[in-house]
Length: 406
Length: 227
Image (cartoon, rainbow over all chains, first blue to last red):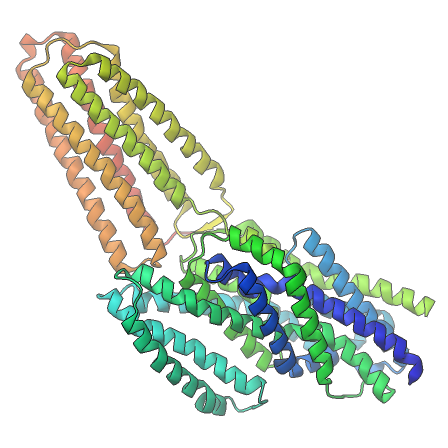
């Protein structure tokens, strides 16, 4: 299929651009709490985020990519390979454009929303609303609503449990000695279980918990417990616990970056993979495994986005979030990462941004954050509902033009 | 994403603490003014009274800033209304100090009996305690939020509030004692002097009254907001 090669090349470039935009936009999501709480410098954040986003995309990205690529519209209805190519280009271009426009206006939009909107947009233009897998679409929309709510509930509970286990006890310093390692170990369990699930493609959650999660948790506890016991940073539990979680936050933030890479690489690579299927198999709708090099390319794009544009965002964020302490940052990261990775394990495309925003509000509801701007929360919610139709409209327009020109 | 720079609003607690520091300064200056008054150093007393007026203006400025930044579109760990009323009360503490200063300025006192002077000075000293305790209380409120409303921190806050109430009640007793003394010697006192003394006592005891009202608001803040 040598005649589609230039198109494939173009799609790959667009996918790379989209990956760049994802990295540029969402870099702050994973690292902002750590930078905001002064756990790491913006420069360190960029390096950690870049590397982990890539690892996340490359190792963790597979199954979600399948979901985005083939789940939202019925690809078997697209018999003309050119349509899939034009469509993927339209979707990628629309999503990237919308991301760039939204970022310019400071609108917090989801990369996942953008690409789904783009895919749905061209799909409807081509084959009407019937092509959209509305069951899947409903599931996706529900997950947008559910993920911030679950993120909020999770963060609320984690925050309450953390304060109750440490600060509200009769001897807070003693409790901090025991419970800080416990919370750190819990984070380790989640990370290790998801590692099993995503990297080793294990499907049995129980095996993951037993073979990976629990051992990792126990090892973490055995390391963290004596360390914290010997080097508790202060007599004041408030100060001590914060400085412990300052270090832990680097790990949890990395975890969020990893999860973000795993989830959001699909937004850039999904449409490219669809075109790749056409290019390599000669027909649309075939299920082919997403090649590793495509994931690597997506990961590279995201990492590049983090490094080139994300740096500025992270730096600004680091200066502006002054009200966030390390335990709050940990709570938000831990809760969001867990929700995101569980969702990704279930194959649901969810947005890191939404989950993190949900988690921030959750900590706020637990009276943990001193002040949250309600207007911005409402603005975010509105943007969630606006993104899909807007991206769909842009994509539809580009698709029509491509059909006429191509 | 820029959402991060906008999502977190500036917390009103650090400015509240700053405001409280200015309030303490006003009350401390008043104590010095009262001492100068007792020494009969009216020049110094005048200077300090003018200074209190200036400090009170600074407190007002901070108050306005906090009010302007506390839009109803914030999700706060404590009720916005409680913060605004607290701020109002905390500012009233400085206002009360200024009122006393005004009374010190308007009239060069005649002969004030030493025992009455003594009571007024005691009231002044206790007022400083009230203002300082209130400062401690707002700093503790900040800690309560830092700790996620931990019971221990809340208990510590209750202790401070109780102390403020104790101080207020001591000042009330002193106020009553002073009134009694003024009427005991009413025959030897000019109408103007009596009026002057009683008003100074009233404004000084106002300092702790307002501190107590402010502390009451802190008590309410520790309960979850209604919204």
